Image (cartoon, rainbow, N blue to C red; front, side, top):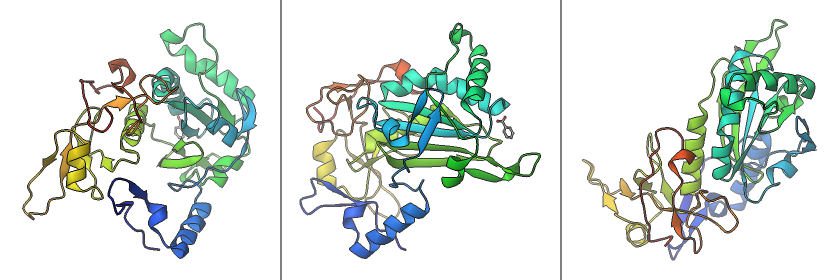
Length: 307
Ligand code: BEZ
């Protein structure tokens, strides 16, 4: 089924209409069927699995919606406990948990073993980091998926990487959700460790560009200029954002437009550096350097739309 543009301008051009509203009833039905067929498709609702975790038993949805100050979740799967790549990844996630929290985001891992194994493995993970001396539990829950029910239901298997018994290993899936809705999915083979600084960068980009028609260009880092998406009229971009620029191209088409990175703001009750798109009545603020992935520098920024 053909997809329409991700969003389009409404008649008064003040609001952007989400893609689903721009589709016909028949197209929307098709989209709903596609989401059911692929539960990790962008826009799908994460199935509400019952979870057995290192921090107790609860449903996926109750975890995803458990903390109004952390509406975002990074859900990531691991092939197996006591494996080297997974051990390095889990340690990094533990260390980055405060940075994710400052972006309004919580973490939850999954590995295909039971909770006793996860608890024992966590001690190995923490022992590798001097700053974790004295700690023996990770900062986030790890789901026990011993029978691979969840990874199988979510299509998170790596068919090319098999156990000695010939069973496919779980891949390294990573899902970013807002509430119970899938916003981004990446799937790595079991043999390649992920870069969680990149996950944090992507999260910040998604927060900065939600519902305002903005987008971030290749290799974007926080505070660099952002792209004005095709759905936004130039006059609206000029009035809502700062320092509008149009790049001239051989085609003469006026589509490569950018503005200064909008200021970040806090929504009522949110963590101080959480980035909101066009936060209502929020004073401008920016994340501290220490909150951002390495290489992201913060400079002062202001924006007509948020101030
Ligand atoms: C690991 O987690 O270390 C790993 C998993 C599967 C294949 C190779 C390495």
